[in-house]
Image 1 (cartoon, rainbow over the protein chains, first blue to last red):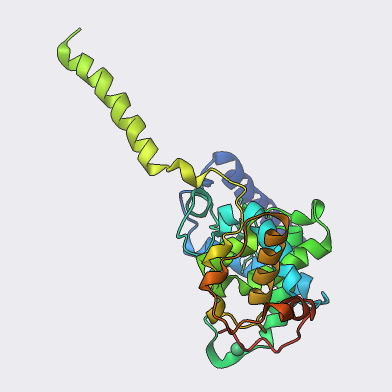
Image 2: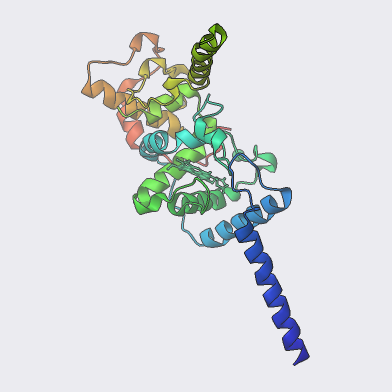
Length: 177
Length: 101
Ligand SMILES: [Cu+2]
């Protein structure tokens, strides 16, 4: 019985703290005010593990078909480059103003140390999942609501090549005509 | 009104507005439906096994068909055999992805 009372006390106390944090307005939600290291770490780990788990069983199609680069390229230019940039571009309103900041997809994530190509599949899965479902409470929209899986895979294929493209190559691949 | 106030009234908005304009290059917002700039393609550097190169060829060949805007052949080396290009582009090439990094 004593245990139960103690537990109840903790629950009430916990709720009290949560309510105080919520209703006092001490939490700063401004996008130009970064999270503390601790909060950042908590959110980052949560996001990483969530995406890895959700994406683990996605089947990756052949991404080397050149046609994918053409459909994926123009979609990327019109829907994504404002946030994720294009070759030769360093920043945009979105890339600077959003928090969490959209990663610059024109530079390779880890510049290819030790040559672990097994990770290509894993990266493709994650990218597909993120593009389709988006990321809560960040600027990343869920494109799956308005786009077929094939178009999303085409963007995954394009993003895979994006860090290798020159501005001229990018222009040709992404132009409408 | 004092002259100083007048000057301030004119100068402050002017400076703020012009600063906003420089910080915010309008060309960054204009999304233009551009045509592929195929004249910049350097065929001598292109590896026809690379999906990126094949995709670029396809785009520019399609553009040349639909418009009078032809590829600039004068810049190309004689080495390129255009008769083989359609064939190559259609040949959905498989490769191990180790050519371009
Ligand atoms: Cu490699």
